[in-house]
Image (tube, rainbow, N blue to C red; front, side, top):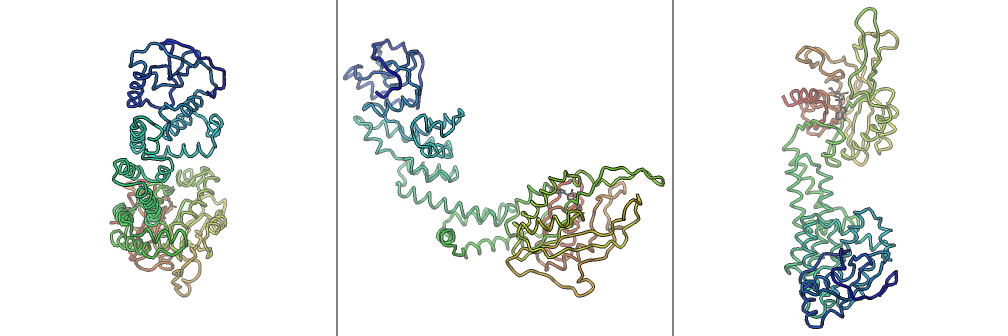
Length: 520
Ligand SMILES: C[S@@+](CC[C@H](N)C(=O)[O-])C[C@H]1O[C@@H](n2cnc3c(N)ncnc32)[C@H](O)[C@@H]1O
């Protein structure tokens, strides 16, 4: 008996045992088998292993069989091992009569220890097992509780089925650790379906493995389809997913993943879904945070971006003016981020735009003058080709309130293109072909007002400027995206010129105004 500490064998009353150290659940069928054996050959061949304090750590099934048979005393090995779990496992392995522990028991024991805060290395050290063996058991935790339950029940039944030799029944057990590893990456529903089919004998192990492989392949294809189509229309995406699950694209996907062969049929599936999407939706307006909502857009799904995010030019400074009431330039919280966060956001915008734009798609992003070069560098780093800058020259800039600085009369935008395909640039001839456009700040009927007659949005862009940009980089029917649409100027121009549009705006008041303006 491989104990860490010396043990003595003593005849002791059963009620010396006051607690159990359990490494697995009891198997009632096995207790029943032991009762029959005890009846036939008595208790002597079945010593228990206990600590001096009466904690039973070896022979739990025997103990239950003794108790059920009305036995009051038996031989006990008394010792104090450093690790009760390890000792219990070694006793189990050494005993010819014990119900063998299976990978289900080992895995559950590892999970319990991990849940109690042990590291994988500490568990490996405790048992003298390799770290990777512990990692393998830990990975089985990703099998859903329902599926694991089927496995554990089937395993327990298989192990207690054999009449004379429990070891022989291990070979007969349906599930193996190796087999189960093949379903770890699958969804809970797929896992459950496979283990139920195998446990019920509807499929054999070969079919189990083949089906697990097929599901893994289809899940990978589904991930790609999800990225390509985005989540704006669950119905269209669901139909494409269902098509994938029928298995018609498996072979093509494997050739793509292993040899880089273009998955032509799958690309046709995506194109058909996009066509349906385009027919069904021409204007999509989303209220919410850009970073969150933009995740619903598919990869390489938009033809152009014309957007006007915060400039971070707001200031809390209050100017006390002799001629009029106090003045300050604070557009609101949305334009007043800490600089570090704002710079990180510019990089995130660049990466996100790159993801959602089709190869060859172009964009204009307005940006405050201090951040013009920074934005160009960030967009360059994201993979865009930087085409230069564009300037909107305000023909009616107004007069300076403070007279302390120049009155800004220019708005700046960066122009960028995602490489990889032919881009649209509809050169308009001169003077429109210069990289500036002269137009007034929007006013009159175009300027949206609150019910009280105040300016609704402090930075509403003139339609003329946005229209100029849209004419340059898009064609009728193209899908244009603006993730910071404010009052929806880009959407309104898109609609008026026969383009499709997706817009995001976080502020409810601005969003409501944009919705009425774009859809109205
Ligand atoms: C410069 S304004 C756009 C004005 C717009 N071009 C127009 O003509 O009305 C920027 C807009 O981005 C919105 N915004 C700022 N951060 C946002 C975010 N994280 N998600 C969505 N919208 C945001 C602001 O509420 C603001 O309306």
